[in-house]
Image 1 (tube, rainbow, N blue to C red):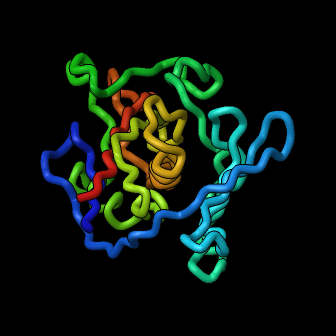
Image 2 (spheres, one colour):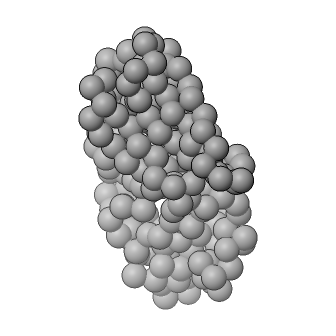
Length: 208
């Protein structure tokens, strides 16, 4: 199976990489830890080895999710408590007073839009090199478009604000992780001065 990660609003060509996927259909075991939090374990076919451990409070992913190999060895951890969902305006403490979505074409009339170093092609290269499609998401055929909102401040520093539209906590967390680790952008320039700006970054996780 092949998988690709691309930015549909910026390029028409997906970036693909070859991966080998399993055909396991793990069992699921749910345990109530308290009145609000439940633990969900996925096990191998024989029901002997835990392949992943997830925690939920209602429908919200919480805590540290863990992924294990077939021998039960820990291979990955994801802190789901970093995830925030909603429009940037839902988090006023994180959104700058001067803020314009660069997808708004009016921005081009008043200044220079923010840009990833090296432009669109280098942004695609960065994502290709750094995104790790979660193994469990591959095995479970989880795919879709994640919309990440962030702020590029006056110095060009990117800060992830929220997931405005998610797919699954595994993909949402990976989109958050890789976007939050981006190098500095070229800042937005309005009236000759750098200003903070909101940026929506759609990332499509696709299996084929």
